[in-house]
Length: 292
View 1 (cartoon, rainbow, N blue to C red):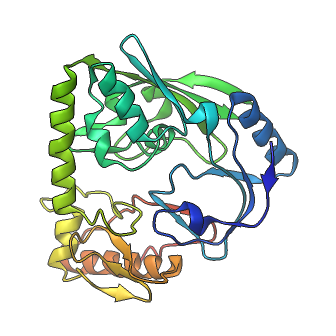
View 2: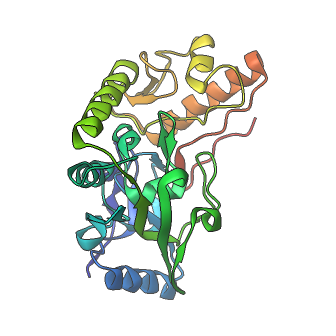
């Protein structure tokens, strides 16, 4: 397994920002993943996984860590009975295709989430009333000390959250699905994709939703829209004119521009609604969102 140095992570993030990784590896098997984690542990390097680069904001100065991009066997998906078994690096699109071909439903909501099976476990991803915690049977988590299967309860999965930390890599996920005619699955996916396209800036470079929805009558997007933030720009980043809970790369954006927009959005939501918005995006490297 080859380890590369100084690879710019802007190539691997959906927003298109981020500096170099101290080291980058692309393990394709469980053995290679274990080897990569041991390599990092020997050098006392932190470990992070990028998935498809969505829900991720990487510091402009880069990150002093071993960054993993899972592929090969760790990026495939197959059906075993009523289980959809996906590698941690398998894209949701590939996993959904396998489920639909086998006539298994329950994963349709994932068509709105441009990420991976493992990334979904990490943040308990969800959309349109569905979430990972409701369909995950168990996940194989690998660390430098070893590996083991964990249930959603053992993973501490709750709204857009799990207890997993850096250095704990989801290598495989088992989803418990239900039989459903393939044409019904296809129709539901078509419906959800149309809803997403109508409401979100799907043709722009974003990292996905910025903030978690608060316990409030307004969603984060509606709240920020009411604060007059649609189209607000700092540097090369702007809050989407289409949906205020998305930040777009409007041209040569830097991660620090996105962080500045997030800080301004939090300030306005606090002043106007008394709500402290919590960011959904994962911050990687020396990035910090002001608490006040």
